Length: 78
Image 1: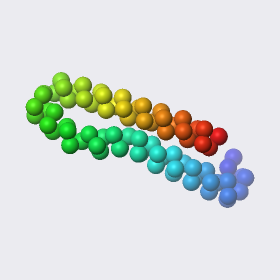
Image 2 (image 1 turned 30 degrees about the vertical axis):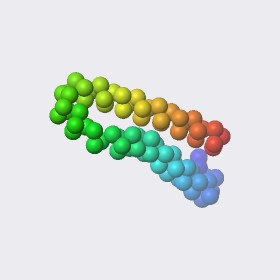
Image 3 (image 1 turned 180 degrees about the vertical axis):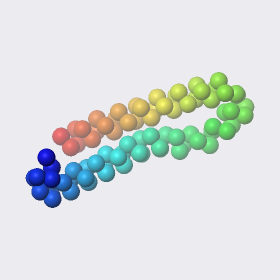
């Protein structure tokens, strides 16, 4: 439907998609970038079981931040 509305609508939709993808990347990559240096130490010192627990915790943080950003984007662009 957007191409029939004109180039301005199509351009704004493309820009909105890029903004949403950027925020999603910040939510997921940011958590793992901060925690990545700890991965080697956890595996070497505490074993794979502790590493798995740590990864589950990081995935939980990533989902939490993604949800917060999604809600913020929803209310901002609404």
